[in-house]
Image 1 (cartoon, rainbow, N blue to C red):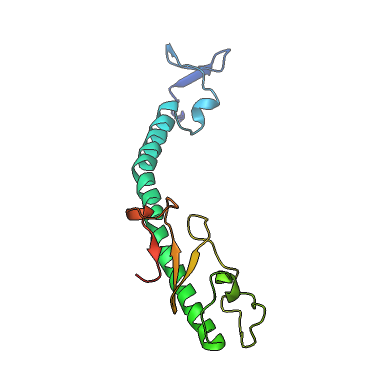
Image 2: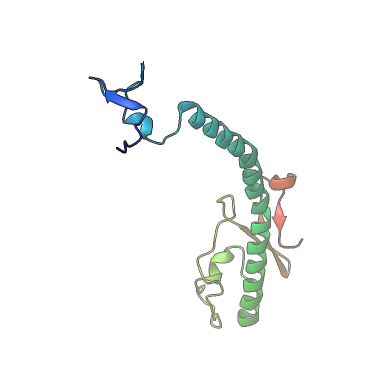
Length: 165
């Protein structure tokens, strides 16, 4: 008894690389059909989803950054107040308006008991990139930032931030 191996339904290749199955020809296989990839529609759907996320999350993040600036100014003003108190302990007085906050980093002329610098780095600008204002108020002092608008008064992020608050 002769044993014949089972025959595949694929019979022969045609001249173009296609394979015939019985009487039906099969389309030739291309190299691209075997490669994995994304269709244009899939890519567009992903782009739309990313765009929606940016549109929803972006304003919230930007709004929080603007709301954090007044708090950062308050912290810097508190640091100035501490440094000014240390200056007063050493020198016996607060700086004059002419000396300003720069005496917290550099010794003023004619002051013998200056034991600074009282700030680790140069005097910073406020979060809106403007100089802080230093004023003498009798025997006390005032350090302030005019807020986002840079003008006296205002509300919310435009409000003045004072060391006396």
